Image (tube, rainbow, N blue to C red; front, side, top):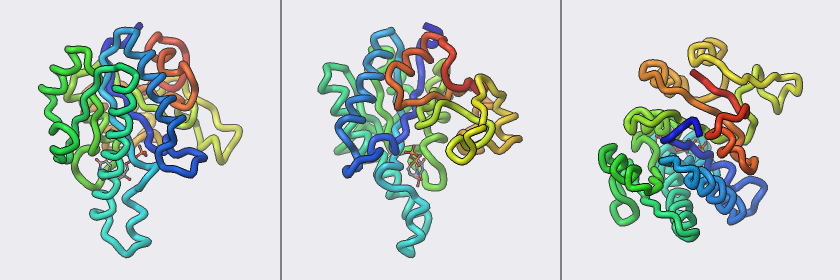
Length: 234
Ligand code: UDP
C-alpha cells in the first residue's frame, strides 16, 4: 500500500446515475464496498461527499434565486448524501462518524480538523459533509482543504471517467488519458480536473491529487496499492 491516510472525494452525481431516485441503493452499496476494501488495507479514510445528484448551485438561476441561496441548497444536498453514506457504512459494521462544516448539530458533529484526526487515528471513517461550509465553490475545494488540514498523504478524487484527459472524452473519442500530470500544467491547459482554487491550494501546500474512476469495482484499492490507474496530479 502506498498511501496510509487519504481524503477521498466522492462524486454525488454517481449516486443517482441512470436512476429514478437521487440516492440509488446500488450506488451507495458500491461506494461502501469500495470504502470497506480500502479500510481493510489499513488506510485511514476521510470522505468528502458531493451533492450534484440532488442539487447544484448553478440551477438556482432558473428559479430566479441568487447563486448564494442555490449554493446553500447544494451544501444541504451534500449533507443528505452524507447521512445516507454514514448510515450505509455503519450498516456493514464499519465505525464511522458524520461531521459537517455547515453546522447542523442534530445531524452531525461540527467539523474540527483536530477532532477529525483523533477519529481517524481511532480507525473511524470520517464522513465530511457540508462542503467548505461556504457558498461559491464546490466539494472539490472542500476535499483539498480537508486533505491539507488533516495532513493526509493524498487527496483521491472519484469521478465517472478514468482520469484526466487531454480533452473531454465524451466529446472527443480521440482524447488521451494522462497517467501523470503536474498541477501547474492542469491549470495552464485549463483541464477540467477540479476548481482552479482547489488546484492552486494543492500547489501551495504540496498536496497531490489522484483522479480515478469511482464507478469501477476494485479501482480504489488499485490506486492505494500503486497500480497504474487514473491520473496522478503532482
Ligand atoms: N457547494 C458550495 N460550497 C461548497 C461545496 C459545495 O456552495 O463548499 C454547493 C455548490 O452549489 C455545488 C453543490 O454544493 O454545486 C454540490 O456540490 P458539488 O457540485 O461539489 O457536488 P459533486 O459534483 O461532487 O456531486
